[in-house]
Length: 173
Image (cartoon, rainbow, N blue to C red):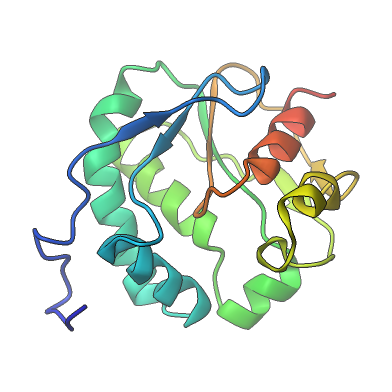
């Protein structure tokens, strides 16, 4: 809630990584670092919707510092960012998930593979839960195979619809 000196204050850091129940059988698990109602969740929204790449990079470092120990135990083959439509990337100047995934890749040494694309459509944030589950069907596409164990990175987890659509595409379903 206060402007800092290019760092995340200790009070705003998430206390720990929380493992969330998987939303489907395609997904083994999920890590959740903060809620929307927490200081870091509000900062993430500010970075994403305020088009603040610098803040997103600081958040990526903070998230990666907390997440890296759990990730390193997974024996991953690739880190894949959830895709953003080109219109959203152009508007923001970056893809939030790609900024987060790049930080995870740098910290863990697991290669980042930009394997997914998404065609334009309604913003997931503007849809109800039921609509989110169908909105991405046929819009998320894989542009390359990614063998092995993949960590899918997204900036926001609400219904799990994006994770499900991305995992189905990565699995070739």
